[in-house]
Image 1 (cartoon, rainbow, N blue to C red):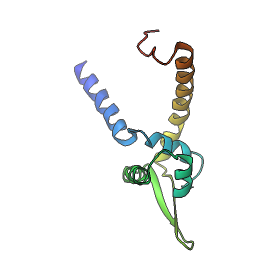
Image 2: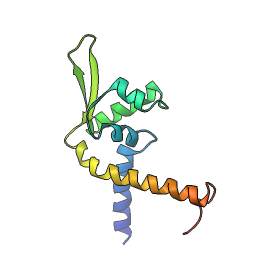
Image 3: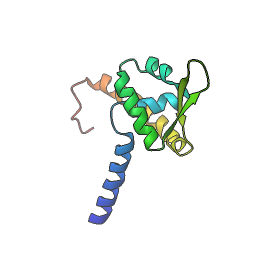
Image 4: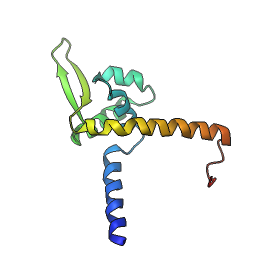
Length: 119
């Protein structure tokens, strides 16, 4: 049993290493339907700093989740989209969004400070 727990913990840690952080899932959510240019992503996530957006995009690219393509325009523009491997994450994004919607409803009904309830 201990080995199974250790393995599953390692799997969760591997997932968090790729998808963890405040912004990565939000970035992926915006890329799920179509590739987007850097400026589009920045407009869609105005709370993120340019430095953080660049860092998160680079990490997702390094992990093979998204690709970066330089478009042959003047001036050159860059767009980001899912790799084939990254597309395997798309089916889990909608349930996460749905869970977040239900969580916000629950928090509204129960009051913001009632997060320790077991029900």
